[in-house]
Image (cartoon, rainbow, N blue to C red; front, side, top):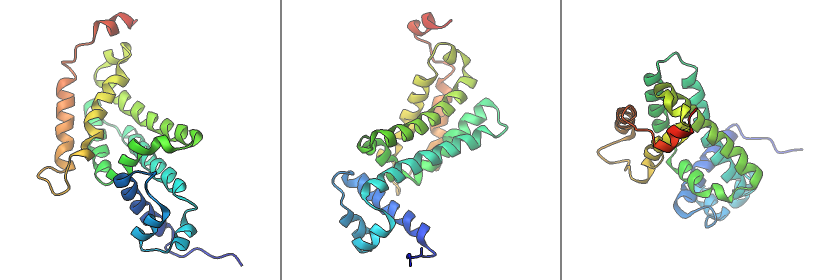
Length: 207
């Protein structure tokens, strides 16, 4: 008879992913072993294999789960009836809040996506591109000329430059938390967006 799943099976899988993400973020995916993940989880290696066949399966689920949550966030905000500035501020606030609880997963996505097999990497990066595209649409709604000059994505990536690297320097016990920083990021970006001068090359390329 096949072994049934425990009532807490899904919760245990998620707990394992949290531990694995912390180990991958600290030591890197290649340097982390299944033994280390099992020890961090307080499980035997045999029990760990009941939940995940190998550490690669964990890597895929950590990276894909993270970008999928980000895409769901962008889709949810996009479905709301908001003005252009309110939409972008909400997107920034929501994504910064998500990063606050997913710093390890975000570091794994940033550092370890190169270890994914081609099909898995492309699928996950496609979702990541959809997240960027959602932000780019919100940016263009505020400054339409960026879309006309094919600068929507570059300017959006400048915004992500502020957001994506918060995990490298924000301390959980520091004076500033993610809730405090999100409106600061929004103010800096939105304050500078109207003053952004389009490069001459971009103006020449626009219709």
